[in-house]
Length: 257
Image (cartoon, rainbow, N blue to C red; front, side, top):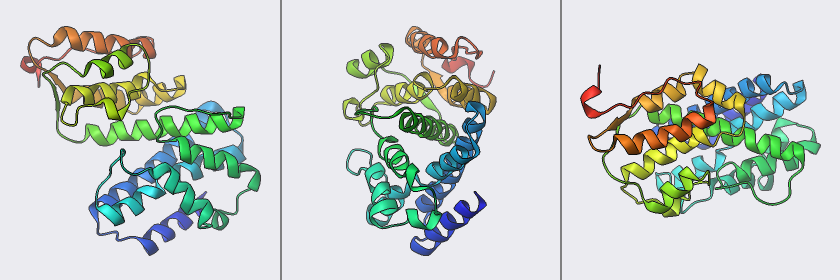
């Protein structure tokens, strides 16, 4: 796997401007997701070969993002399918050959990359294809929670879009097209759904052990009058975690206490 990491590093450094903040952000994200894939592989007791494939998928899942930054200097999930473009780089452009993996894993890698950023997993999949697709979706969400928790607080001071709330409460994936562009409540539901919708209990365990669950909840402040809404949302998260986490409703007045 050190070889995989070296190939990935050389590819990014040779093709993209590492002085670009967004490129560096995505580079570091890719490595962290690969490490999360290792952790999840250990918990799921994968074979050594599967462990290596999981690490590789984590490294290259966002290759399309680098090209997106190069073209537009921003990330936009609604206008650019970076999962599909990651496959273009790996398979159409031939980068997969540099990693010298068993070709029997090619379709597994293709599907994992393509579906990692999609609203839902669709279409026929083998059990093995589904395993890796679910793993990368979980690992990616975990690191996105980590990244978001490092930024400014989110304030729950309005009702979410009705469709977004209904999907959240009924365990349906949130569609980014349904979110208000500046709706902070919708963003809060999206991040909480990342925890609620994790496929594996082992992924939830990592969210708790690594502090991602605590940290994302800690940046959510609740304006007076919206405590009941917050309790309703957190109840759904607690259902997913079987009440493993100690979650408290935090109002504006309780910040820092």
